[in-house]
Image 1: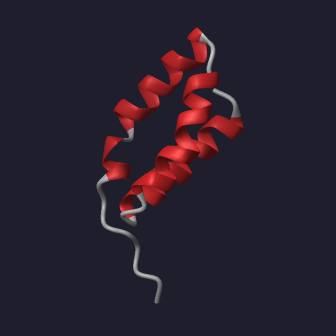
Image 2: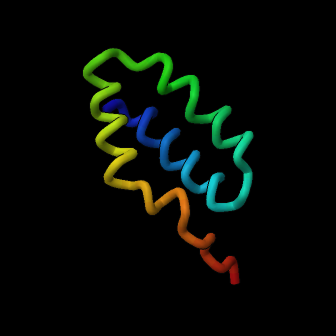
Length: 62
């Protein structure tokens, strides 16, 4: 997976945890749609392995 794709997915996870769903989709959707079949498989695997990243509590900023 390209580093830029990974960064976008990680950013989307963080945004989702902060209840910023529309922004998360705006970040993730373009990279998911632009992925070739091989990268799409890697994205699907990453999403499966990191599902908890999308539902964890945001870290305390203090």
